[in-house]
Length: 241
Image 1 (cartoon, rainbow, N blue to C red):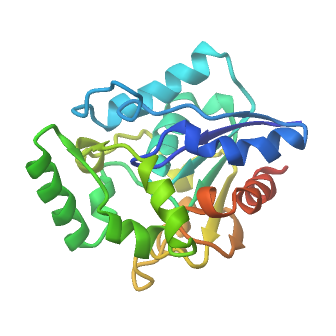
Image 2 (image 1 turned 180 degrees about the vertical axis):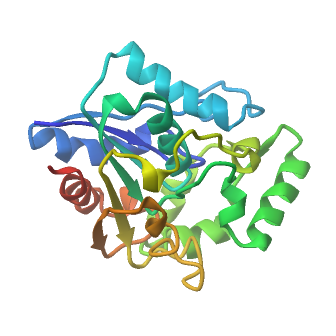
Image 3 (image 1 turned 30 degrees about the vertical axis):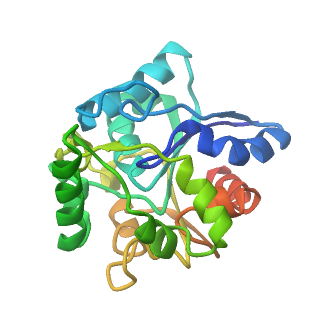
């Protein structure tokens, strides 16, 4: 049996992975769903990417977790890449679910269209607390396009504002993902339009992993809300030996 640690994306907390963790646990595995610094209740929204990465390093160390399958979703790909660079000896496999794959010196905003970067900078300026929030129309049409309106609305209400600095900070890595010796997998939801299909998650970002296992399934960027069981099986498939 395996130990899975599931790292959420921007605007989420670990609670949004509870429904995904349940079938993984029912299959006999252990599953952890921590919340990254900056998205925990009461967190200031001024923290950066290094603080976010360190919060998961601390989680693994505090719980003395090893031989883990570490999965990151979307922005969580930035986090798990940094964690693997710092405590790779604790990780058996990295799994990226429609996630950003950075090389040393890259920021998340380097991998999105310019209009997306501008949108979040403008929202952050308007909010005045260092955070951004995904506008509902973008959420509804691009992120959770496989949901009905009621499901999309309920899911949106679970989100929280996100520290904009984590999008703009450049990651510092000793080893780029393709050169890491840790086995890697990439889960690609084929209806995900959070990134335009002219600038796709796979293979544009997945190929930065070097050698990796590909798992493709139908679904949107937010399959954790619309079909958590299907996502759980994909994670199991991506994380198997």
